[in-house]
Image 1 (cartoon, rainbow, N blue to C red):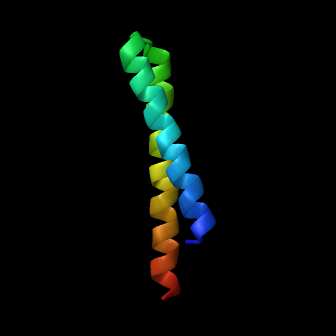
Image 2: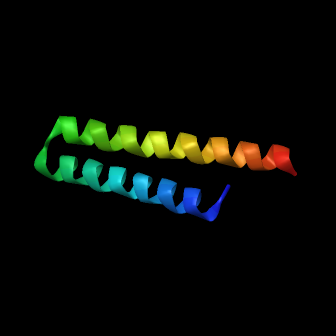
Length: 57
């Protein structure tokens, strides 16, 4: 996984966490769900990149 991908995925996960936390604080279920979805998407991307790296070696 390139360093750029790592940073991009980490930023996406952080953005999702912020949205989820904001949704919790404001009792906004749509924002909570959107944040969870973004975090999950970023986590899946990271897992895919790690798998590709494992097969490269």
